[in-house]
Each structure stands twice: as structure tokens, then as C-alpha cells.
Length: 280
Image (cartoon, rainbow, N blue to C red; front, side):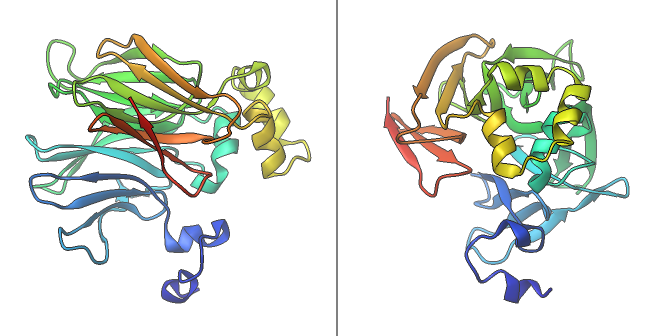
């Protein structure tokens, strides 16, 4: 399959492994470059004038990145922090990754100057969103399967260690820092009795995967059967400050990212073709 020919049509999941699927994007304010975490094509960058993306990282220690997910940039350290969700599953297989409680996710650091990659944390159950704290002392990483936000210390007496920062009422996707240093977390869905049971034991999830369910049926069960939208605001200490919901999914469903700017929230979703705007 020739990429230039297969990628001219509207988005098609069957060709995303060829055309790419950008999941996380961040601008470097210092250079104007756009850094991209592409699920299939790895860590990429686009120059300030636009154009084709150039690959930066496609493999680490001889192992190809299988599910590059999100990133954040420390402009002072000239570093990009990014996640690889799994070494076993591709993005199209995200539900088997969750239900089997796959713990092969990683958090890594890319040094822009030396082009070297350093492994910071492994064994993450569906490594997802990434956000750097305002004082740059720690990183937050969404561990979607366990519904946790992990804190990885970059500086101070706990540097190199990690801990649970928050336990959430649903499956976290991307994390974005607010202008004052709090964090907005998008929840793909809230957790129900079925999804809590299915993701508590690997045998339960694997048993479900053996049943004759298609993608839509599995997703229906995992999200509780009702499309909805949930956003959580966390303090810099992990306290839940605010919860915003569209419980009936009338306007938004399955939120993937929340960006705060000029008193408004810009809200994205992996399953609806528009951006929601909420005035704070």
C-alpha cells in the first residue's frame, strides 16, 4: 500500500497504521515547532512554517514504538516527555489492552539536543496523557486501566520515584495543565460495575475478549452503555477541585482532552468530529 494514495480519503481505521494517527500535540513556544505523538509513526516534529512531519523517535532499544500516545515539553531542559501505551497492542486494539490489563506501557524522555531517549518508568497499565508541573519538578501520567494519575518526580529528594497522585471515577485520557498550575483531566468514560469488575482481574477481561462481541458491543459494555462526557480538575496536590459532566451525551461524548485558555475550556473527543467550548 502506498501511503500517499491511501491517505487522501476521509479517516478510515483500517488504514490508520499506514497514514498515522496523531494523538498528542504540543507547540514549543521557544522554537515554534509542533511536536506530535503519533500512535503508529512515533514521535515527530513539524517546523514553524508547517509542512510534512519529520520522525524523531520510532524505536527505543531496538523495539519499535507500537502505540505512541501523548507528550509534554520542558523548554528549559530542552526535553520532550512522551508515553508509549503498550509494547503488545496497537491503538486499534485499545480495548484488548485495557481488558487484558496489559502493563507494558512506558514513560520516556527525548533530549532534543542529543537526540537520546531515556526510559523513566515502565510497567504502566495503558500509559496515556502526560503533563509537566508548573515548577517542572514532576510529571503526571494517566494510567488508564487502573483509573489512576501517577506522579513521577523529576527533581527533589524523590527524583526518579513515582506514586499515585489521584484515583479517578473513570478512565483518564489526556492531562493538560491550567494557567495557574492545576490540571484538567479528560475521562473517556466513567467507571461502572461491569467495567470495574472487568478491569480488576486479568482473567475476567480475557474471558470477555473470548466472547463473540464486536468493537461496538465491547465499547458499549466498557463505558456503561450510555454515551457521556466527564472532565475533572485536579489541584497540584491531586485533590479533585471540580467535575464537569454531560451525563446524557447531548453535546459531548467520550472526552479526550481539555485545554484551558482565556477563561474557556476547549474540549476534544476521539469520537465526535468537533471541538466543544465551555466558558468558565
